[in-house]
Amino acid sequence: MGMKIVCQNKKAYHDYHIDAKFEAGMVLSGPEVKSLRAGKANLKDGYVQIDERGELRMYNVHISQYTYATHNPNEPMRARKLLMHKREINKLIGKLKEKGLALIPLKIYFVENGKAKVELGLARGKKQYDKRASIKERESDRDLQRVMRRNSQD
Image (cartoon, rainbow, N blue to C red; front, side, top):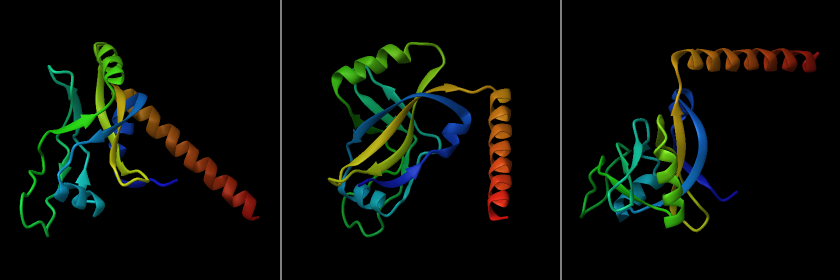
């Protein structure tokens, strides 16, 4: 479609079970948008919390400083406000009260009209044996694909 992905949090799918996904807008400054368009972002340790006023804040997401910015340089690790409808935030508040659930950013992307969006995942942490099972399943799928590819070439 008309979506340009800036960065993804691939490690999140390894460390968490993603129960639900949500889309939110981001409040950014001009140099931050330019930096995102250049692909200079990292979601690795990012997380989202709801503050006392009922607003979403994204923490530990690194958006590098835009090198050609002449004024107002951005702080790379600052907390960024996220934009969602109030009813969606209220739904998230109810779900986050469950034990073991966290809200993490999965990817940052631009939509057709040029606005930067972040995909949030309602995540439940995996145990070590779940991670091993995921790796084993992925490897067996790859082996199966290899065998099918070899058989189709013959």
